[in-house]
Length: 200
Image 1 (cartoon, rainbow, N blue to C red):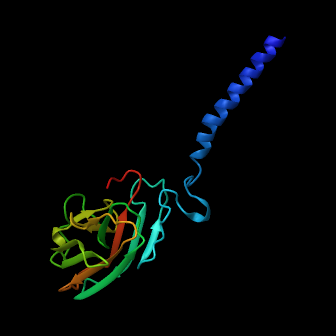
Image 2: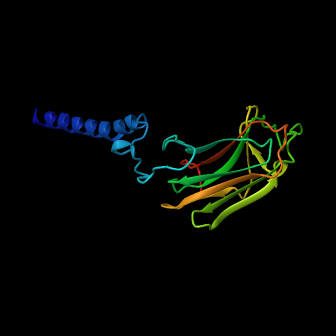
Image 3: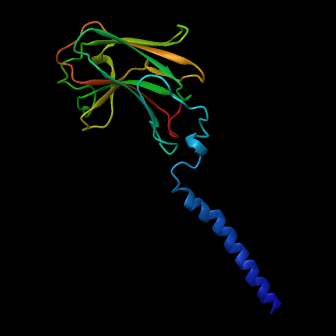
């Protein structure tokens, strides 16, 4: 009888061990952000506190790509202009600067019916002390079109409009249009990056 009791105790101990090992892992997958510490701070980015221009969004640590999105608002490419923005408190992940244009993404290549491809957009990013991080000046027809095929919007970027911010540094973005185009659709300036699938 004692031997049977010991077997039952051993079985119960194994059962509880398996439950806590595997059961907790199953429960864990339903927790939205198990690395979020108290007061909303993410343990992967404990100093994350964006205070610059625009609207900053963190989609959470389970985002494979495009975890962080900074929307600097609408830009009017129909007329000549110059705009400046300040970025401060970005996380140390790779970002890409996009022009999100209200125009469908073609199935392949660049759209043939886009009538504002000759608009030259100049965008530059500098540290607060004036050190240049990147500078691009090119007509939109030379930018890379990306996004989801069939969507009403397209995200345009170039190989130069990428950077990884450094902790504690602030940056200034300048967007210049020398000559606009009245056929230019609505446009927004975005910085998007991060995600566990993303590589800097």
